[in-house]
Length: 561
Image 1 (cartoon, rainbow, N blue to C red):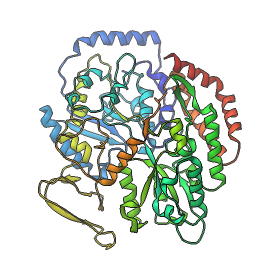
Image 2: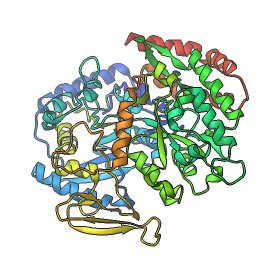
Image 3: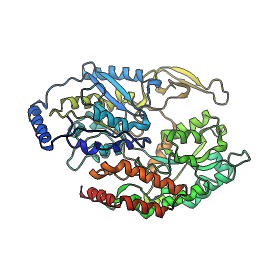
Image 4: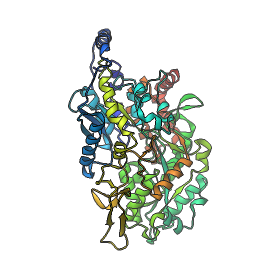
């Protein structure tokens, strides 16, 4: 059964606003209610009655996992083969058959759907997750509810401990009592600012000349006013993003970092003390910069409503006459993905893999944060059935997380996908874009040579990775399988040389109760400032008038932890 503290988190639908990719609303959920004393008594009795079963044998026959879009081996993209090969490999490791059920939710309302799954079901139900992926922000909200299993001992005794190269990632997730309720197999990654080289060339600029915000802003003005696409008319914009700020998704400022600079429009620790960053002067200054960018036409107005998919597709579309020159997005693999999408659209074909350049953090970002922000890593969590025994939960850990970093067969499945579907070591040759002489590319591999294959749902693209990024993983593969893509390598190197860790996500009782409404109000105020409906000063004054007392209570609770 669920512990009584669950009612604190799920008395509102706040959790649903914290999706890893853009959800802003969700249904309000109802929770069990009853006498607190009797609930405590029942918990104690159950714990006493089942304590002796802690070390009992448990055979896991079915594993139900809930995932988001970070598992790229989707149903349309070879998931059946991934699932079949996973079951075979893990069943051999465990010594008994196991069935894997994958519930891949819509990325846009992931947290909302997770909230409903966890509050309307219970362990043992057909659709209740045994384990699931959570963003760092979601994880902070669920960690103290009693829903998640403390895997500290399992993690400490895992076989992969001997191969971990980044131990701090998970050690830093432990609470003050040493509990570990989530596991991050990779570090978080973050966003960098990409610029179309052809546009820079067209306006006579070099990325090396963009050092300060004034330099950056003058570049945006040139992209907006100086016909960078060469069609002889206006219509282009300097920059597009998935929102002026993602106030429902840490680290909040990463899609437009140059405008936000040192602002952080959420609760964060400053010199060891929690503060409300939305009420700070730095946020007023950031909103004022955004408003000027909107008024000057350098920010594409579609930014306000665009999701990540819409912003990406507009930026690399074949119709460059209404596109933008700058797009801040995820580092590493996305340098390759964005470049390939421009190629598919026939954009800047003469530049090949040099279509994009990466902008080093401007001086104002260096002076405040120190670089681009490396977000807190997404985590896997295991649900706790609270029967007093760790047997079920340990079995889930052994089947899912222990094998996920086995260094060999199963880790390869999570990293690259299914053998002979997403990757292979057999001799083969294939051609992408065979019908387009300008884009046609031939691939040939010898027997025994590891390589990625054509994507199952698009034979004109080459598969990239599955769930684990091999560059970001905390324990590398030991089988020598490496996909050497120069762009991805360069992108990851650029980010790691220019990033700092994000502030810790905030979590406390009052914030859990009000966060959905709080985020909605802050987003509305931000958009009103940017579009010129009110000044930044008036917006923050309005925020403090409504939320000042609540904000102070949140800060007090955070600093008391």
